[in-house]
Image (cartoon, rainbow, N blue to C red; front, side, top):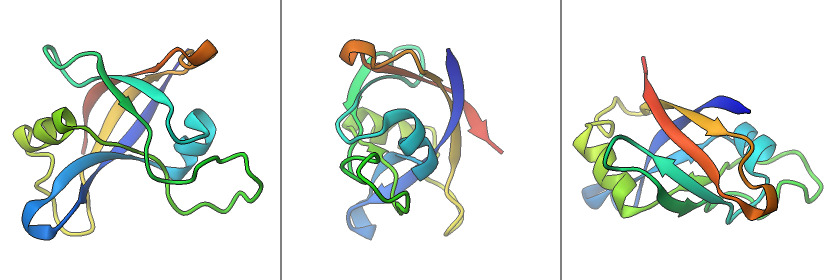
Length: 124
């Protein structure tokens, strides 16, 4: 089964030398990924397919009690940063980051099979 989810372009690092990543909402982190370190095979476009990445940051485990969590997971890798900059998804107004629509194969992670995540379009 597949689901559509929105990821947010987020800067990290010092303002003069940002590295960009894809942020997963707290809700989607809790529902689909559940814990840090989940393997994801990411497709951004033709030629940038099957990028192996893991969920990072956020809560260690969303099943550890309290439902109040403030930070979802991130996907960070050099190829993601370069793609975001090449597509100019990093050019947005302050506090209004670029949202990107992805298709998530929710059959992923059965017996540690990686999730499959494919870029669809920029959300306008």
